[in-house]
Image (cartoon, rainbow, N blue to C red; front, side, top):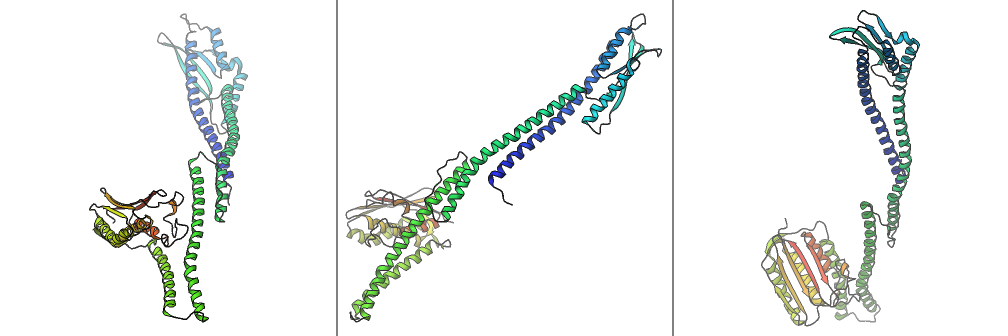
Length: 464
């Protein structure tokens, strides 16, 4: 059975509040009972000793007892739940509470029993008597018997105090119940509303609607991170959707032109408008090569982006590799009158030499392609203990701030005109990034429009 978050949170708050009150009540009563019991027992002993001491003072040196005071002591003790019987050394009863008022004594014992049974239904206490000797000048002159309901008892005031404590706990429990309802409702609203909003936005995202965002802010870290994640997800999916559409348009454009050319040439030759000669067949062959090249680029991209990309690693000097690649580009840079400089520094790296070559070739090709005549290109190699940094810097046309986040995406080209002089298929940097990341490295770019670009490749020296 499924429950709403509001219901579960509210019930959990109520459950916790009730459990806490129940535990507080139980432990309070247990603690109170134990300590109150010890207090009453000790208090009873203290009262007994006080009564014995008072009665002892009523024995005179002439061997007589002050019966009037003893009677007052006995009546006062009776009112406190104690039945006193004083006997002299000869066994003569000087004062006996049961003789003084037997009915009151029986009623008092019965009342005490009812008090204890009302709180403890299985109470097994009863009437007990303690006998104390009365000495005068080292001679026993009598005894005092003190009877009470034992081993301890609660009088009316004691029971009233305990009942008041329990009433207070009951009131606190009721208050806590309603407070938990209020707090639970408030907390569930603050927790569930953002989550419900996230749910609604997620549903819209699943249907392809990426424009909606969660504007509500929460001071709860997890809720805040969840809403930010959903917003970022929507933005990322929207960007990916834009790139997908652009990719479709780019691929369609790349295929449409050679296919249209082939179709028109073939139709013209089939209809007899054009004569089938070597030049026209060569033109058709060139268009087929273009289509094949595009398909090959797509296959190459799929290979490099595969999670199972195999790296044939070996140790080699990265500067030596870059120097040889630059030599291969010398004619191209010379024809475009671009000054290229290489600040070489011998550094040994464990990597796939062929694939790292592809990275350098792609970066140099881009620098050559997007740097105007008489421009400058510089390649730097720096290293520390664990990493090697390769920088390719040019003063070419640069990349706009809007295009910068997407330049590593498949078939993305900042040149919207798709000029073949600069555009290419748009997968060079995607392949470059895939190779670098396969080596556990990273590639970064710094660029401003009309102020050149700087591509930074960071590779670990030892890829194990």
